[in-house]
Amino acid sequence: MKQTILTGDRPTGRLHLGHYVGSLQNRIKMQDEYRQFIMIADGQALTDNAENPEKIRESVFDVVLDYLAVGIDPNKSVILIQSQIPELSELAMYFMNLVSLARVEQNPTVKTEIKQKKFGRGVPAGFVMYPISQAADILGFKATVVPVGEDQLPMIEQTNEIVDRFNAVYGKVFDRVKAVVPENARLPGIDGAAKMGKSLGNAIYLSDPLKVISEKVMTMYTDPTHLKVSDPGHVKGNMVFTYLDVFDPNKDEVEELKKQYKKGGLGDVVVKKRLIGVLENLIKPIRERREELAKDQNNIIKILEKGTLVAQEVVQETLEEVRRAMRLDYFG
Image 1 (tube, one colour):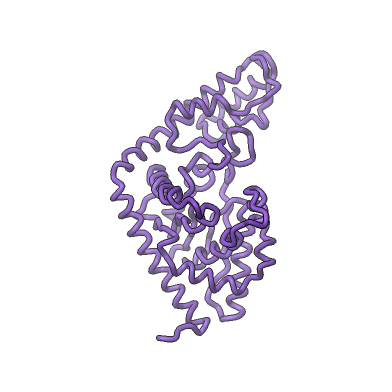
Image 2 (tube, one colour):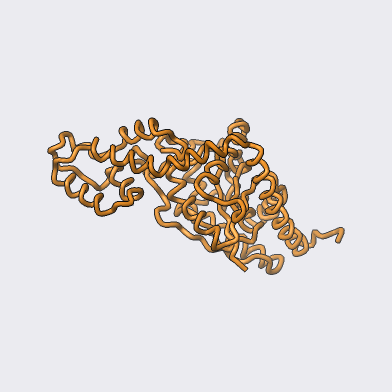
């Protein structure tokens, strides 16, 4: 039996290079090694987008198109929509009784995101509780491995606390979960910010046309002290070289460019044009496949419906086990 893995995304827009480096590449590899469920977490996306459900609905299709275009195979990975599996919500309700409000509010990831979004005390209750919902998602599928960025490690810690508490109160049902942090889990934004993000306006998308890629690369943060071509430049913190390190397959040539840039005599425009070519080589086949897939929306719906039904059967089995353990199996 292959180990079960759960991963996924909030559908709040198209996916970008940060997703590609941090998770999508890894999922393509893992779909041959694990029983992989990929969740489109529309319910979780609504915790801070409740007044804009149309955005979430449209983004579900954007996300699936990106999945398929990069090479995620629906015959190997189960792609599902969170909201269409009500059993996950029931499981989350039971878990809420095992976690104190103080513990949820002290979750470092939640605290950071509340501050970033400037919610203050007006934070939606669903947003505060989403670590418990995530635990229900993970444990509903009996996932043993969950790929996460370092900022999400507190979520896995909270999931394992719920595992321990549930098993102690009701008897052994769940196993503890292992977090896996992929290499290159976080790609900086083109502005030099620590993270590329949809809401930060610093992302290059997997569906961007060449013109847009070019415009974005030409505005990338480089070295503010490198005013003339003849000036020695700094490579560290220079986003163009950061991206070349990640995406350029010719590492030796990149190292030579770095030496030349540090010494002086290499302009920013030259290295930016190289990066534009590298990114277009990567994105063009993804973009073209995406455009082709988008012509048949019915096929996308069929893939989602099939995956969601398969996923629902798995969660139903888990929930029946949970109800028996909690003495909630009244009708046999």
